[in-house]
Length: 327
Image 1 (tube, rainbow, N blue to C red):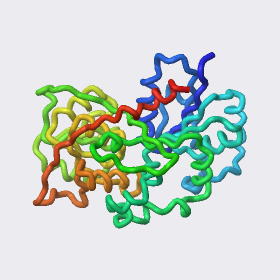
Image 2: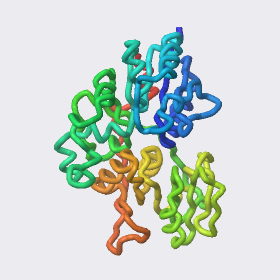
Image 3: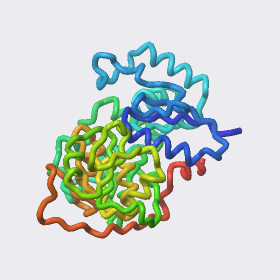
Image 4: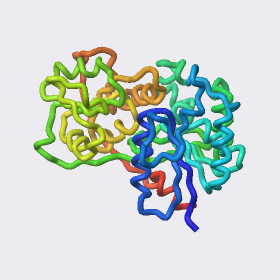
C-alpha cells in the first residue's frame, strides 16, 4: 500500500519553490500526494486545495479556526486519511492534523528563528540585531505554540547546517538539507552579478543598474531594463548556469535562493525583505557566518571583502524525501 501524504505550502513565493523541488524529488516514488497551497505558493496543475479561502477577507494576516470553509477542509483530509502531513509551518493544515491525530512534520526555514539555541542567538548577534523578530518561545502566538507542540518532528530547512561551524539548535528541532540546484562551468553564462528576486524590489534594480553586465531572474519578466537584463526565474537551467558562473549572487534573503548560492560556493549580497522573518533570519546569520553581506542602501561599502564559501556536507543530515523513506 502506497504512503498517503498531504503537503501544505505556506503563503509565500519561496514556499512555492520548496514545494516544486520536493515534488520533483518524489516523482518516481509510489506515494499518493495531495497538495494544499495558497495562490502565492500554488502549482496550478498539482494543487488540490487552495487555502486562501480560509483567510479572513478583510484581515488576511489574522488566523482564525472558526471558519466554515475549514470544516469542509477538515472533512476532506479526514476522508483522504493521510499517513503523514508535511507542513511548511502552515497553520490551518497543522490544526487539522492535530484534530485528526495524524503524524505531522513541520519543515520550514522560519523554524531557524525559533530552533536556534539561546547561546547562538547572542553569538551571532540575533538578540542584538532585530531582536523584535526573534522573540523568546513564550511570546510566540498561541496558535503557533500549539502547532509546534503538536508536531511530531520540527525540521529546520536551511543551508547553514552544511557550514563549517554549524549553529547549535534546541532539543526537539532537527536539520533538513534544503533542495538546491547545482550548475556547471560555462563561459556564455558568465556575468559580474547574477540576482534572483521573488518580489519586485526597485532598490535591487537601481543597484544593478550601476553594475556592468548584470542579470536578474524574476517572476516579473514583463519589467524591462537596459541593465540589468531580466530573465525568467522558472527557467531553472539558465538560472543556475548564470548563478554558478557569475562573480557574485544577489537576492532578498529567501532560503531556496541562498541555498543555491551556498552550494555553488557563491558569496551573496542580501537586500533583505524586512517584512519576512525568513529573510531577516538569513541576512543576520549569513553575515555573521561570512556567507553574505547585508545591503541597507544601493551602494557597496568601501571596505568589502568576499569570503570563500566552503560547503561541509553533514552525512547525518538528509533531504526531506530521504527522511520520508525511513517511515
